[in-house]
Image (cartoon, rainbow, N blue to C red; front, top):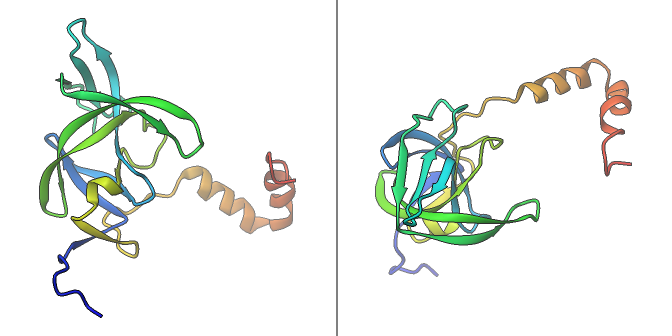
Amino acid sequence: MENNNAQILDVIGSTEYVDIAGFKHIPAKIDTGADTSAIWASEINMAEDGTLAFALFGPRSPLYTGEILSTTDYVVKTIRSSHGDKQIRYRVKLPLVIGGKSFETTFTLANRSRNNFPVLIGRRTIEGLFLVDVSKSSVKRRYNQDTLRLNQKLQEDPYKFHQEYYKNQKGTK
C-alpha cells in the first residue's frame, strides 16, 4: 500500500560532488553505513582562548589552499573507525551543498589522506533529504596503480600470483 503522505526525496548516487565552506566540486563518498560525516582536515590547533583552527584537506591534496578556518562552535566525539579503533575527533558545523540542496551540517575533522575520498557523507546528514541509489555515481574513480599492477600480474600467471602475493598475506593461510 502506498503512503500518499510520504515525502518525495531527491535521489543521489554513492558518490557525489559537493560544495563545503566555499570549496567547490569536492568528491564525496555517500556512506549509509557511517553514522556521521567526516572531512579531511589538517593543521588542527587549539588557541589558548579555546578557538579551534584547522585547514580543510592537506598539503598533498589538490583541494588544499592553506586557508585556516576557525570556530568556537565545536564539540568532541568518540568515533570507532571501520578498523575498530577509537578516536577522539572535533566535530564542527560547515555549510554543505549536495544534490542542489544547501544546508549546514556537522563534520568530524579527520585525516583522510589515505582515503579515496576527502569527504564522507554519513546517514545522519542525508536522512530525510535524500535516497541513495548505489547504481548512480557522479564521481568517476581512478584505479589505484597498485591494483592495476597486481591485476596485470594476475593475468600473466594466476598460479604464480597466488603463490607470490596472495598466499603470503596475513590471515589468508
